[in-house]
Amino acid sequence: MISFKSLIGRLKIWIKVARLPFLTATFIPVFLGTAIGWSEAKRFDLVTFFMALVGASLLHLAVNLCNDYFDHVTRNDWLNKTPTPFSGGSRVIQEGMISPKGILAFSLACFTAGSLIGLWLNHRMGTNVILFLGITGVFLGFFYTALPLKIGYRGFGEMVVGFCFGPLVVMGSYYVQAMKFSWAAFWASVPIGILVGLILFINEFPDYEADRAVNKNTVVVLLGKEKAMILFNIFLWMVYIIIALCAIFRSLPWLSLITFLTIQAAFKIMGISKKNFDKVNELLPANAGTIGLHTMVGFLMSASFLLKAFF
Image (tube, rainbow, N blue to C red; front, top):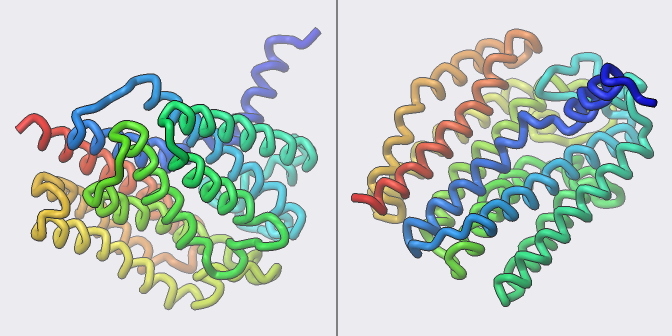
């Protein structure tokens, strides 16, 4: 009989492997797409929203687990001597907590469960839009680190992650509510996608040595830390430039400019990253700050559409 203490211990291990705090990367685009759908189409179906959120979250978990397994296969995580709470994988394989086969099995189970929810949503919509979006997401998510494509090892990882957690999830979440596509949803998804890509980007700095050792050609490995940090800050600026231009040209509501309330946090991230891009521990506030910035910008962008609907 399993004791309560043992059960809690195993639960903590699975929470660690799932990396639940990173699910904000899924929650925010789902909330944003739903908010825009309600704002433009005046439609909100609670069951559809909940199932879209759960389905997307399961696929996100599946990708995290899949990455752990294949980064184990390439020995990427084994060679990482500077893991942090934000990078280097969950470490459960390296610490002997769960077997590699167990991680792969859990990943495939999450892919299956998320896909089944996607098929249910596709049937509920009466079209095949969600089917095609789902196939795209599952394919890119699995082959992000899986053989033979290993997309994240070939210099496209940041772009693919930005696309999947930006336009793909936002547009999908919008569609299941509004039953159509929207340019406003697309343009709102772009800065959100960039910010998710930047979360991955800045988390690659502590992994530089291990990534280079196994030919995992992230942007940081390809450019080197100093040039990569310049590019990171350029893209951080682009988030606000895109929002401003979209507000000016009315692709986004003018209320979307409330996202500029976060610019001080962005300046802080820039300052820390410029000074500490080659220092693992000193860079951690910027790693955490980028996750927080994505959450704040996404929340305020969602609020701008809800406020637009009211006023």
